[in-house]
Length: 111
Image (cartoon, rainbow, N blue to C red; front, top):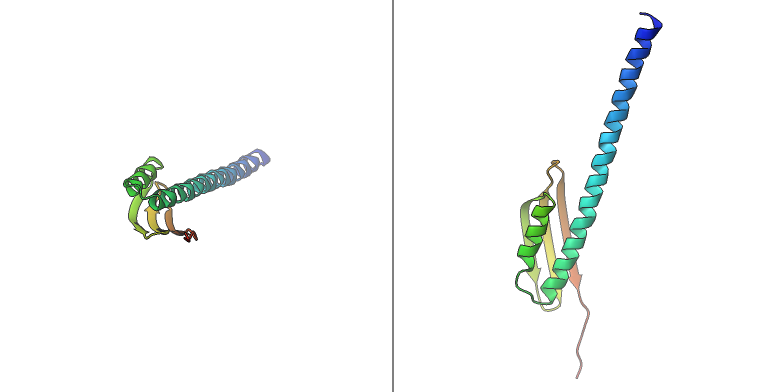
């Protein structure tokens, strides 16, 4: 094989490695973005639940669909000053999110 042929093969191998690295980097960035957005949505849902609003869970489900997440399971539990959310969802990339979150307000009213 001559030097031009060898250079062409080396260039193809190197460009393939670079393309794969770029794809994985972009995929990681998208997953981080989705993770941050889901955390924010869960926090908003906690506050909504503690304020005793009626459509908190449906709003969370709507926001998850807008992000392209398929909800596998969602459990929202609420007591007087405590809210718990368990979420299991799958992205369009096949990545699975499992989140468990709890918000407890330590507010007491004394008379």
